[in-house]
Length: 380
Image (cartoon, rainbow, N blue to C red; front, side, top):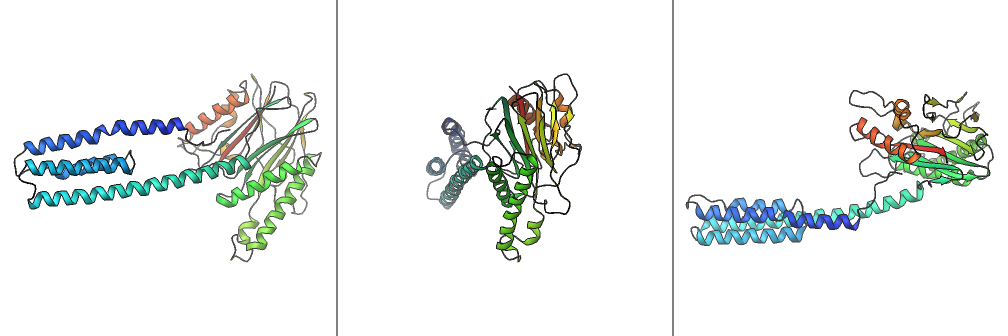
């Protein structure tokens, strides 16, 4: 699974070494400006340019090193004043005071930036922990199956959004879930956690996928009802109108251990999965009748169902969210997932998703507009 990890100690050590290598630049500027100023006529004053040394240092170093460079710049200004017109002239005194004030402000800026950086590191650490709790990495193998998962968050610094997936063992099969929560931000993360938690509990209490989908729908609607009770009057954390429009598109799949048995799929308003086989066209496993998303199961006439599909050994089942197929390039063309995936049909699940990640990001120019997730499953 693709995640944003914490920076390793080796990376931090590398940053420290680079910062101390770059310090040669402001030191060289201090020496160069001082030499040129002293050698120039009395009417030319280059001392004010010394402020560039602490300013440059602040771009790659912390407050201590920036303060040291600032102090050296002030010392150089004093040195210039002694050998170039007199230290106690009004001009040199003004330059020294101004350099001290500007250097102090730069150091204070560095301190604030460093404090914000530590806060961001703590927030990212908490976010990573939440991600590991909610969206657990899939094991490489479950029963006779090999699995891999991909998650790409659209928002900067985000590690978890509204796309979700999970897999678990049930008697004689592996049960897989992939879904997409409507909406963004914290409500989407909350709904993601609710659906994943319900699946991990209910997946072991229902033999059939329609019954499981019905149970997930009921659990999600109870979750929304609780939020309505807390803020349904429009004054609480969630307005009733927003809660009514929240739902989750889901695909549930049972992949039996016996390769002779069909794969069962229940599609609840989600993009159909793809079946990849080397040397053969990509096939969409489109259900005969699509059921509505989770959260809308109380509508009249709604009935969840499952469809059976033949998946031969060596074929790969690729489940994905609409963040993949609805990604657009600079010409506003949708990402051709089936066309691209056909070239990776023979790859292992992890390699297939690595190809998908790199190709998808290159297609959109490095930044997605929506979260994207995919799960690849292949019989070992």
